[in-house]
Image 1: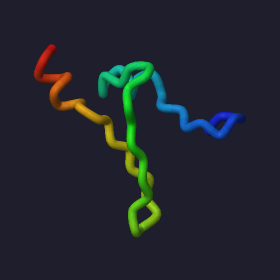
Image 2: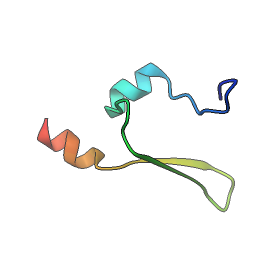
Image 3: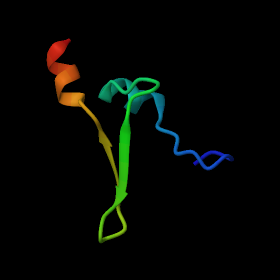
Image 4: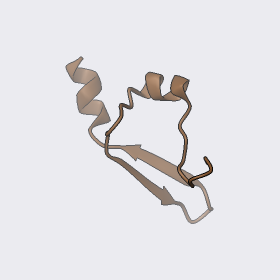
Length: 49
């Protein structure tokens, strides 16, 4: 987490998951206090490329 409270996703992970600036993301906490990140339309983007 940076000094402004933003969650930072490392460049290597962004590249591997094909996350781009402006992509809609959804975050949630599970009942076991795990942080989950969902990337909207990732499957569509991967199959289209």
